[in-house]
Length: 240
Image (cartoon, rainbow, N blue to C red; front, side, top):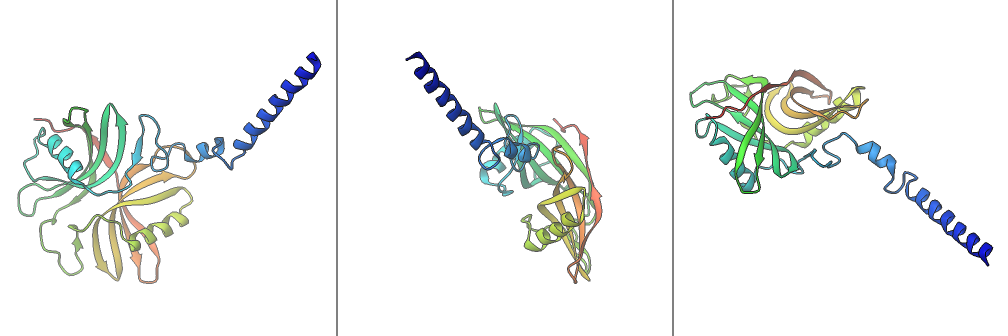
């Protein structure tokens, strides 16, 4: 009788091991899928990590959080405007990564573009905890665009034309993958120039993507190429 029981238990153990192997063969929810998504903020949410926003829209709730945080800084009312919600991070509350435009209240003033981290606590308060300014600046933001000039006050929604241009660039680039996040400006030439906030990832590593402002030329024959790249520089929030 003891031998029969022993054989029965051994059979159950073998069945369990086979079931585990089937679940982790790469077709189910096994380790291979975790390896593919690790390190990318747009594909996975890790505890304490950022997740790329499903929509860049500045909703009423996001606008309210932004306004509360900006009210604590030295920015004058209306100078700093949210353009796109980039990413979110769940903490004891929420961190929001918001791309914003800063235009001083002077005609012809230089416009700057900022990547802000805003912390909203569980009590409804909000504070700018980090602010990075892009090296990209616009000196004629408030002026009416001239023929052949840039138009910067555009909808931030990424168009199909912009997506196609960056898809071609990513395919041709062996090292980098480019994902357009928000449209900043456009210029009609013999073809089209686009100025775009982009998420840039390294194809060869699991390092987190970075944000850059990139200008791209899209030719009439469908060719697309990067013409300029602008990084975000570290700086401290301007608190009053």
